[in-house]
Amino acid sequence: VYTSFTAKVYAIVAQIPAGKVATYGDIAQIIGNPLAARAVGMALSRNLNTHQVPCHRVVGSDGSLRGYAFGGILAKSRLLQQEGVPIRNGKVDLKKSRWHSAANVY
DNA sequence: AAAATGACGGTGT
DNA sequence: TACACCGCCATTT
Image (cartoon, rainbow, N blue to C red; front, side, top):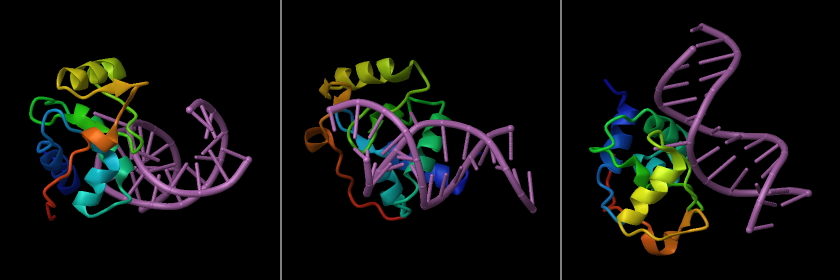
């Protein structure tokens, strides 16, 4: 039982391929509300089924790892590296690993 | 119905 | 580069 907004967030995050990442702001922008980055984080923090919604592939606007309900930043960092996303100083290189969505429209 | 919360983001110091 | 502030928003209290 999700709200419309939350459902959109999950739908989009579910499309992020392994090895790539997106920022909370990116998700918000795709949804159509570029100022709701914070709300996106809220939705993800409540996400339980990490298998369907790879929320570990969502990072801060500067590439910093923000949080992960299932094991914290550490686990999040490991998961990304396992997928081939290099992490330096606790940050991912957005220039290289950023996911460019196929202009989804909501 | 009203106030508080948090996995953000941009700006200023 | 790091940190403190402040504005934003959907969701939760």
